[in-house]
Image (cartoon, rainbow, N blue to C red; front, top):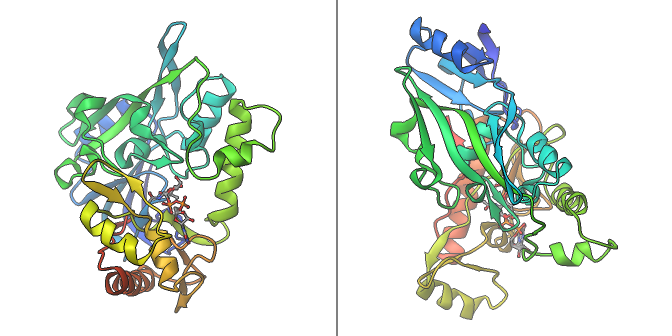
Length: 331
Ligand code: EPU
């Protein structure tokens, strides 16, 4: 499908258009668009627009995958390998895994977005990251060359991957291959998950998915009601020495150990301590239930959210001496 001047889907609810919108349903169709020279520069490949902040209309071609097939490629008693189209809605895939009694993806329930972007962004929640489940990522580049990246080639780190690097802008994810477990196991050590599960007679995949969905729904705004892009900032990783000093001053500061020398501090906690939770700046605001999320109160544009983001960053810098960086990509 090729459209001109189409509104670009984005969960902030900004009114932005693409000069050209190209949507394809198969790798072959994308190959045809490329071979016919229809993907002219500048171009941008998006998923569901759940991690993007558009500052203005996009003067170029926006690509979107509608590759939606899911196929089991191999399985044994312990595990299953499944090949999933980049255009599959992420949470539909999690639901599919849970329905099949495949373990591993359930903590990532209800994360907005699509499968292709999940592997680019290395989405994560409640102690699990998508890299824990990926076996390989299938791609095609702007020259029409296909390449499969094994998981250890994807350079995964917290909210990072090879595919996020600027030089990989011309590489499009077409399928992600996942490996899920058939053996019962759960990741329950994050936050209040164990506590929430006590309300149920037994733990199973469906119950854990329900619990994760309930936690998310209680803290995170529904983009259909209040425009947002989930966590707006990444949690900063700081040297342990710096963390120890801060901990003296703020004994209740939550943290996660990264390695012997580094510690991750929740940006939401710092923003909250700066008094920003629930505060608005023009038509943009810091969410009142989770300070890591910036919301569009209605009628906001990219510049309004950036103004709020700059003000929040300045407060955190001043109070804690820490620079926080947006997780959301500015376009
Ligand atoms: N906190 C506050 N005030 C707030 C928000 C958080 O004090 O307004 C405190 C919490 O009490 C807790 C700590 O900060 O002690 C961490 O909060 P939470 O568990 O809500 O997680 P987070 O670090 O704020 C990260 C991810 C989320 C993910 C959750 C759960 C990032 C950037 N964000 O948030 O991911 O759902 O952990 O695993 O890593 C997303 O990427 O869009 C997203 C929502």
